[in-house]
Amino acid sequence: MIDLYYWGTPNGHKITIALEEMGLEYQIFPINILENDQFQPDFLRISPNNKIPAIVDQNGPRGEPISVFESGAILQYLGRKTGLFYPLDEQERVEVEQWLMWQMGGFGPMLGQNHHFNKFAPERIPYATERYINETKRLYGVLNKQLVGQKFVAGEYSIADMAILPWALRYEWQSIQLEDYPYVKDYIDRLTARPAIQRALSIKVG
Image 1 (spheres, rainbow, N blue to C red):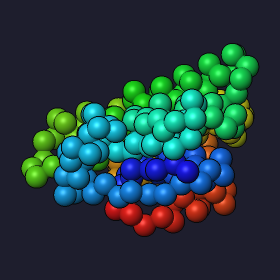
Image 2: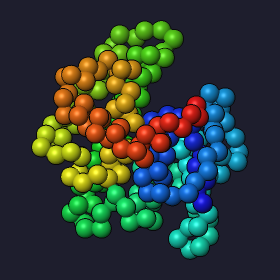
Image 3: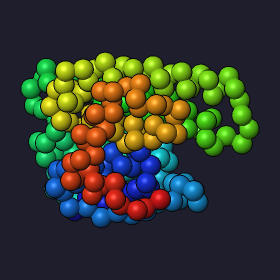
């Protein structure tokens, strides 16, 4: 049994997608980030950076519970645990890891700043809005180019795709016209047709 500390954000969706795709048994513990649950001491013992998601695997690698925070680290851990969607071949694994890190270092943080300044900021700051929209468009262009001639970012379906999709699903928040990125549009359609992803996205927490 895996305990998932979760709220319905793109980073949270990454892990429900992985758990559903890997067929792992899990239970959700909601962390309401709108009410600052992420700063509660019990949660901070699991996730010291006060961010969701985090997991506790009751059957860890030494037969004892293990906690993991940071969505990318969780995806890698689950991939190693199950042997699914995270190849053993080093060359193939590097392909997956570099696109996972691309999401963790750029496609998540930059799009998150876009969301903030474009949708939630109490006052408009034109410089910030333009900066993050432009960077978002650049990143969509990188993704669109990578998908030319292949269905998934690293060749075969992997944890990298599980990380990227939830952020791309919020393209309307980001001033993105998907018609400008046809390979990304097809990618989103292809992934959201998967039953496990549909189950994950149907979870209504947050």
